[in-house]
Image 1 (cartoon, rainbow, N blue to C red):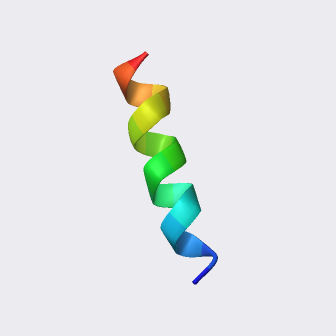
Image 2: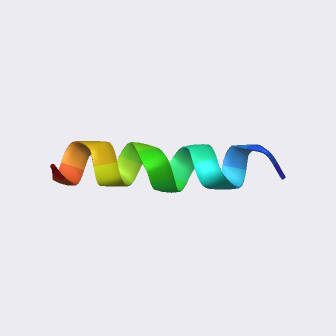
Length: 16
């Protein structure tokens, strides 16, 4: 779904 990429993106944003 469209929420899948958003979740991954959020994780990357927090990792940075």
